[in-house]
Length: 253
Image (cartoon, rainbow, N blue to C red):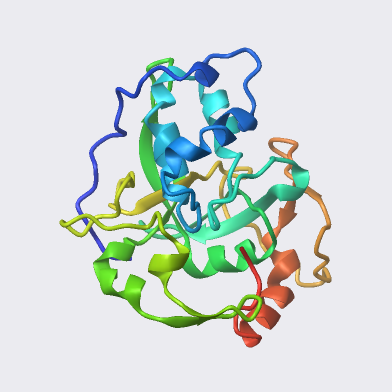
C-alpha cells in the first residue's frame, strides 16, 4: 500500500439523519440513500462512499446502530446487502501496522472472499459515536487507486459474461481522483489508506489455527464463541478461489 498523509479524525457536521436515531431503523434506510451516495448511480468498487456517508454521521448514533448500518453493504463490490448469517464471513487480514487480525465482513457473493485476501488489509481509525467516546476501531482498507490514476483508463478484457474490452473508468464510474491525486469522497485510516468497511473483530481478533483436517465446505456455518454469531469461514472457499484464479477471475460482482 502507498503511504499518504492520513486524516486526523473522522469528518463530522453532516446534516441530521433520521435513521440514526429512529427506533425502527434497518439497513434498508441506508439503501434508500443510494441515489444520494452514488450520484451517477454506479456503486461498482465504490464502497468507500458508503463508508464515508456513515462515518460522517457516526456522532449521531449509538455504536451498535453504526455497526448495524455497516453490515448493509458489500465492501468489495459496493452492492447493498441484507445482513444474515450467510452473508457474514470471518476473514483474517494482514494489518498495515504488522501482524494480522481476524474479523467479520459482509459480502454479496463468495468471490468477494478471494478479492479480500488479494487486495484488502486491516488498519485502525478513531471513531466517535453519539456517546462522545472516541474508539480506536479496526477498519478494512485498500490502497489509493489515484496513485496510478492512469490505470483507470487502461483497457482490459472483462472476463464476465463475454463482455469484451472495457476500462475501470467505465465500469467503476464513482471511482474518481481529485487534482491532488486523492480518491474523491474517501475517508482515510490512521495509516492513510482508504476505508471501505468497519472490521469488527472475531473473538479476541487473533488469527485462529487452521484445521487442516477439515474438508472445505462452502455454506457451512461456524459459531464465534465470544459473540455467538454464526458465520462462514474464508477457509471454506480456498479451493474455489484457486479455481477462480486459474479461470481468469471469471466470477464476481
